Every structure is written in C-alpha cells, then in structure tokens.
Image (cartoon, rainbow, N blue to C red; front, side, top):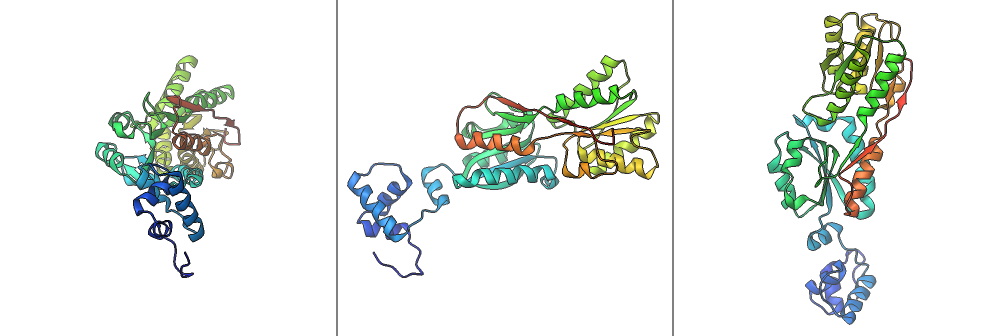
Length: 329
C-alpha cells in the first residue's frame, strides 16, 4: 500500500488496496448503500493506511446533499450585495457552516426571481438556501424541491421559516422615547416599500402619531446614507418646524445628521435624530446616535442552525431589539 510521498491518495487507490470496485469504495466512504461488514472493514483499513481524505464536495454530490449554502439576497439591483448588513449575514453563515463541510456562496435575486430559484433547486451542489430581504413574491416562487432546505431572514410562510428582528417593537419604543422627551412634530424616513420588513416600523409610526393626535410626516428612503440626506432635506423643506426625525436605518440617520450639521441645525436642541441597527459607527457619530439594536449575527446564526439541523422549526421567529440612548435624542 506504499505510495510516493507527493501522491495524494484517491478513491481509486483505496479501491485497489481494498480489492473492491470504485463504486463499492465510494459507498463505504460515503456511508450509504449495501456492503458487507468484511468489505467495509477492508475499505476503512485501506483508507486509513493511505491517509485518504474524502473531498466534501464530491461526497456531497454523490449522496445528493449538496456542499454549499447559498445566501440569496433580494434587491432591485445587484448593488444590494454591497450592503454591510449582507456582509454580517455571510460571515456568520460561513462560521456556522464550516464544521459541516458546507461552503457559502452569495447570489443576487432580482425582485422577479422564479427562474433563479428553480435553478438553485435543481443544482446538486446546493445544500440549502438562505433568503435575505425576502418578499412575498419570492416566497410564492420557492419550488417544492427547495422546501425543507430554505429559510428566510425576513418575512416567512408556513413552508419557509422566517427569522427577523422585532423592528416594529423597536420603532414603537423609539417613538415613545421621542414623545416622552417632549417632541411633537416627529417625521420618519422609511425604508423602501417593496421590502416587507419596512412595513412594521411604518405601522408603528402611524399608530404612535394617531394615538398622540399628531400629524404623520414621512418620506421614503432606501436604507442608504444618500437617501437619508435626501430624506432629511425633503423633511426640512416640507415641514420646517419638525423637531424630531426617526430613520428606519442608522445609515439614513447618519445621512440626516450630516445635512443638519451642514445647515447649522442643533442636534438634539432643535431636532432630535434616532435610527435603527446600532451599527458600530453610531456610537462615534457627532453627536452619537440614539438607535435600537439589530442582532444580525444572532438572527443569521438561528437561521443557519435550522438549515444545518434540517429539522422542523416555527414558521416565524422574532428577535428582540433594545433601545440605546445617546446624545442625538
């Protein structure tokens, strides 16, 4: 069974050493299909003496289990893949999948993505799919062949479990704080309306304004700094007496702060600003940003754990958010 030191043992080497066919050696190594106890012993002994290490990808293809988790991010354009939020999901997924010999790949899904989902369902290399920014249209398009191997960060369904933050509760807590601190002319910069996750904070905002007998003032953004700047400028133009702004993301809140700083508006003296996400830079902005936490890593870990376990999980799991008070509000 000796071999040159530079030669890496292959499955063919194991089969020859054990005196069996390649297909038999493959079945024994992969742990499926018929083989006698004596045959298994010979193959295992040969593999050990040769130092054979099965390729995880090849093994997964043979057994039909796949060897990569696809993080499929829904968005209007591929630019959505550059969102730091996506980086946090992917890095968490990679660390969670490594012990299972499952790699992670990243893919953009357009808002009309049925064909892409069907391609993933029929790809033998795909172990499972983690949907991000999921819409109802995407959920409706998930093929039957993917069910049991797909979960969502965002909206879910009885067939596709959803893992998400309670951003509606976070919005309610933030708005209650703004109101309790004396703010009465509160505007909101929302996220894009095509994303279901943006609806809960908007509903909380509208409910808070109704309950307090205050007018609703909202403009739409897209979770970027640029849209926060544009949204803040629009708020100042349409409602110059605004005394607080709640943004649906820290990036938009930071954009709003930049506009107020450029215009010499005192924050929080004249206008209080609050965001959502608690990104690292939120504590370093000038002034430091009041925001609510978004446990992205915890959410991603829960979603990936469900995929790796392959077990039945609740159709929806909500993660709590905590209000972080800083100087901006």
